[in-house]
Length: 466
Image (cartoon, rainbow, N blue to C red; front, side, top):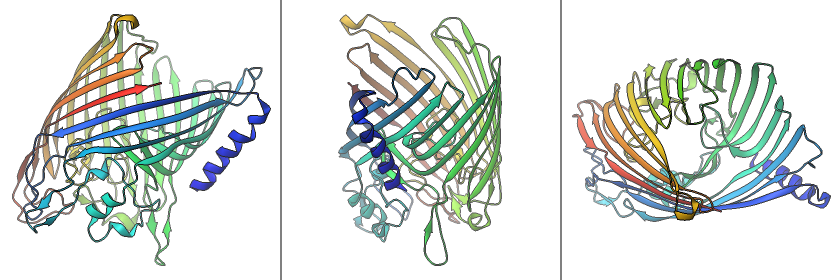
């Protein structure tokens, strides 16, 4: 699958060069991301004691974007892109940690952010027996994240295929697959199929892998992909969109989105109210129902309810929402992409799910509030730019844990021609793992005492583009 996509795109790119009928743009970026956890507890796997990770990344990317049709084709466009990223860890706090329970190296888990690679189908032998050590030694710090063709006819029909950044609500990062849309007046129909997922960001870097696979009795690994269909009706700010996500042999998840936007053309002046309600109703395949995911068995089915509200008043905003799971609704959908709009991957990387919050856990309930704004400062001649700030508070309860978090974000985007942005986040995060559950273990652990962990941390980034 991967070779077919790259060959297809390469043929299109180089095969049209001789026509001399297209224009292109070359761009690049250099970025660095840092996370510093304030909890440096020594690892003790028997007791379930783990620190909050700290690490620093450095990445660079280069991309070429092309228009492949002459300008005379005013109602049609055919574009292509090819881009890659490479990077490394300048610092990793987990590199030399010793498990006090065994006296042996535990191995860093930072590859869950940066460098995860277990082969495309997840069958890498180095995952066993020392998972962290094997995965760290074989991590991959480069990825071809863009390799696509995109055709559009006058905004009423389009098809895109290859590797590109996903725009699907429940599928974030970069996808390897295709999507098709058709627009009929106020109705838009959209189909999405993905057979691979990757990351190419300053904090997250993964080469492409198959997100949902299963193994046949013969030992053959099968990748049937993740798919979605959505029908969106939009009229005067009202959105009604039934949709369905499914991965054969794993889950089928029908859903509905209803929304209202009082000022769709809002550009920073005046008032705007945005209300969104999403219901997700996954049903799980028999083969995964007894498999533990995020602290609980997957189960037969589940439901997720998301209600969020945002108000914009000139350059200020305030909002909030609730996120409620009934049963283990997000066991297989709602984790690798979620429209809730807040980062819930800020717990410890040594816990279950690569630092994921238990707000996606069984019977979890989350309430969140936020506020923020922006200011335009100076101009490009005296380092002018846009200053953004925001505060986010979150309370979560679930079968497995309770969490309390408050985060303050500040970032500054310099005006052109600098293309430079810097940002800082400070987050207080208290995580109480309940009795009968253990940090770092997905399955329940009978008689395990509750544990209170400080997951507070600081994050910072610097991004430069050209």
